[in-house]
Length: 117
Image (tube, rainbow, N blue to C red):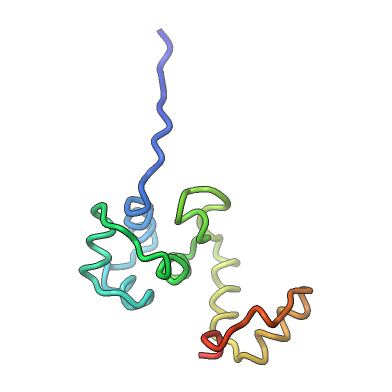
């Protein structure tokens, strides 16, 4: 008899925990990188809800794409080159961010004041 496989889509908490452990981040390190408390990360990993405003900071810290983190669609974890590029972009000045977006034919007005930090 043939085996039957079920496609078990992991919860967002399971994806966060698995990826955090894969890249060897503690809950506290993820909390610090995403502007949350360690206890909130623990709650999320154990089935609690995620504040939608924290998905992008968590995705950045975990070096994954936000859509994958949210519902496991789209590309999965970033390769090391993508992660390095993202880190470089995040640490760039607002002027450099605007220049890079312009070079990529992306309207730099998408940056808001929070990007300047």
